[in-house]
Length: 504
View (tube, rainbow, N blue to C red):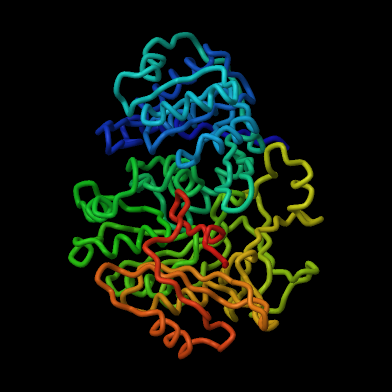
């Protein structure tokens, strides 16, 4: 049975045209659903005039901008495929992705003009369009000149809307296929889990080339007819100010642990009033327990989420009323999602045991672009997707993401999951961030090394950190080494790139 994927922007433009759809903070532009819908149609006409047709890829290299969402929905109206590019990548990396996905058009923010021109030449991209956050540009001129009518077309739920390249923390990035079904079911899951309604106002500050910036909670907010407020790039002091601004009256936002660690360090955090917030979601990496407790003491429940680009992304959510009772848990699966935890042979583990998390549902990717061999390996025979995350369940059925399977190391025959050690180190006053990796050891095979970033003015010593771990952890889990460093390597969404930390 073929099910139609309906256009949520056109729908809301019809039933509530005057409701605000999007507010771009950098430019000050504010568009209601009728205005937003009109600009999307004009962009689709402009792209059509350039020969963009069903299945063609339209690449975007831009900071967060209301125009990025226009491009996404214009692609849908043509049956084209939206291809957001990571603006933090080097030209060679962007070249690789562009040659893999072969976009017909590259739309770029003027701040990335030099890189865009190089990539277009290297990857032989046919059309280049510059945009300038609402200012005079090829993009705005194209919308102004667009004319004609769009052909009637119907997208089906199983059609691909977006190709989103994974962050590439190890190896070459892969283009995850994002279908309309994944977006619809993710929107349903978010609406139920975090109370998204028409009156919701979501702050978009994670990069929109990443599934978190695009799909939690931006696209679900459009699905419900709410408002997205777009922050061009993350800045901690502005973040604190926006969250507490009673006139702006934000209700939702999603960040990664680094964002909230930095928020807690701002001057305004202690006295800020966040009573307007309905949900602050935290995901992308395991949240330090001390951080969740710090926000909970302020009456602000960080709602732990788990997901991946390949899962829509929402795959687990912890309800706000359980935020402190189940500290450390990522919660329960949303309505249309099935989960299993299995051992290396694919058999279900006992409750309480750790294994690999598998997921199945309409919110899960059908595979990767141009990766037929890999696509045959990533699913079980009964359709479960291998997440690569290590997880366990408690006696109440709540799921805990223990770590990435690849981050686990074995010391003296015992499995060691670095996140457990990292949470203990975060208990120390003065620790801003830390990451633990396994390093070779002649006797034990591997032992832990902790890389620790201290808060400004902190005076912790390596020996103090090790002694604290010895008091809290089994001996084989205690890191043999601690290295104090200025900063950890991060990807664009703030997740730590552990593979860049030295093992020698």
